[in-house]
Image (cartoon, rainbow, N blue to C red; front, side):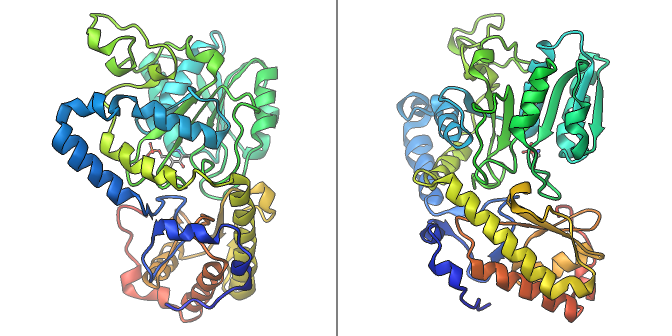
Length: 409
Ligand SMILES: *Cc1c(COP(=O)(O)O)cnc(C)c1O
């Protein structure tokens, strides 16, 4: 696939970052919001951890290579990306599990209140986890899923927890963390923010917004790799009062004292559970090296420009095929993704992927495209829209091979 040049790429302050990734040449990757690509240092770092750490140091590596502290060491690097102070983030478990851990802590802070407010734009797993948590606790709380526009007005003195994902995974619609968190606090409720589609995509200031709990994953815009562990943040003033739901030994005060009963560790470490996934953390650390000199506001600026350009190009070329924008048109109201609704969405995306433009399909009718500014060029965005036009105009998507959905879309 030859991609024609675009003049904006010459002026792009992030253009040189593309060389930090190992991307297939025949692909335009618009799915970094779901699984970020391979950063160039990862293979070496993982190999080194396997050969030197595991292979030579063996069990001594937990101390000699500092493996035991990696969750908080990487947590501090994530903290810098979300406006958190050092010591308030740990990298552990999956995002889904971290949702349950944060929400259980928030429930303990709000006795007597029975309402959890979330919205219809939240990711299903977050809601499922809380449903399971409530069942397990035998709690009779109600999870109320309101429309995203009604969140603010739904927060009153009955609400225990406001639990939201900042960027809607389907449409990219962006919530105002400051305003909603302030409203939650004014009503005496606790806030939990899922930053899955925010971390590495936009500037976040959990400290400034006075967020109580937050969590996210590291395999989307942060490129930690498939199955990379999630992260969890707790406001420093709260950390030492949390009684962890999942009270595992590595979150206990002295794991190697092997005490008979659980006592929580001091600090964010208490939100750990069991043995850290060292090889996954090695990959993540190398992926985070890419970010050390990156200004997230520059990332956001380019992300907005890429999204705007894509919307213009797709509407100009493809409106006649019935595609409609499902994302907010104004860049300030969306995260780093753009979604179009399209009949036969699955088949159209499958045909696009076969032509080297990788986005994803979200049931029932959404074509979702993520814009990761560290490696995408303006030229890629224009070319992706041109390929989409081609697939629609020639009805390539009607071919039989594009009709059957696999397990993962
Ligand atoms: C991707 C995503 C998840 C996934 O959670 P895992 O436990 O990592 O599978 C959860 N919530 C949101 C909002 C997501 O976008």
